[in-house]
Image 1 (cartoon, rainbow, N blue to C red):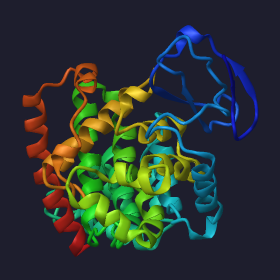
Image 2: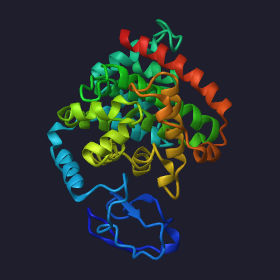
Image 3: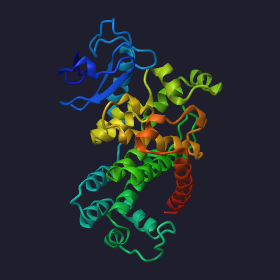
Image 4: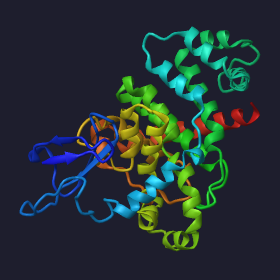
Length: 348
C-alpha cells in the first residue's frame, strides 16, 4: 500500500499485512514527523485507497472540510497559547542523561519570576524544607535534578492551563488540576513499570489537554449545539468535538505539540492517549497517559464529565501489568498530591 504524507508529500510503501483492517492507525512521517493516519476497510475485498484519498471511517477520519478547519485554527499562530521557553528548555535538560544541576539552575535563573516561585515552592510544606532553601543552586542540590525539573515544568505551565473554558463550561483551575493529576499519575505508573519513561510521562501528563485551550473559542461559537450533545450524559467531550468540528482535542493537541517542537514520541502518545490501540508500536507512553487520565477522572479531577464515559482499556492494563487494585492505590496518591501541591502553588 502506498502512503502519502499530506504535509511533505513524500510517499512510502507499507506492506498490507502490517496494517490491521477495520481500524485507524497513526504514526509519524519518517521525513517531516507530521502524523499520518491510515484506515483499511475490514472487508478484504474492498479496494484500499491511499491515506490521502481514503474515505472517512465513521467517527475516525476527518473530512477535507474538517481538515481545512484544523489548518485554519493552526494557521492563526498568534492566537495559539505560547509554551514558555523555560518549559521547553527544562524538558530538554531532563531528557539529557548527562545534564546536571548547573544546567537546570542556569535555565531557571533566566526567568526571575519562575526562579522566585521555585524558591517559594522549594520552601513549602510539600517538600518539607521550610526556610532551608535560599538559592536556585541550593534547591537543585537539595531537591535533586529530577524534582527541580518537574517543579519548573509545573510552574511554567500553570498560567497556560489555569484558565476558564467557557465553551466547555469548565471553571478556571479545573483543567490545571486535571493536568496535575494526570502528570503525577503518569509519573507514578512509569516509575512502577517503565522508569525510563518517568520524565516523559510527567511532561505529557501536564500538556495532554492543551488543545482544549485552542478549541474552546470554536466550541463556544457552537455552545448551544455542544450543550445539547452533552446534556444526556451519553457523550464525552471527544464525541461532541468530533460531531461539531470533525476532529477532537487530542488531534489538535498533537498538532500544537508540533508547533511547540515537543518530541515526537510524546506528541504521538498525546494524540492517542484516549485510544492507545490506534498505535501499532511503541505505545507504552500512550498506555501510561491513557491509564493516568482515567485515574484522574475517577479521582474527581476531570473536567466535568462522568468517569463512566472514559473506561480504561484492558489492553493498556495488560501492557503495563496493572490491576484494578493497583489503580485504586495510585488514585489515592494522586488525590493527595493534587490537593497538596495546588494548595502550596496558590501561595507561591
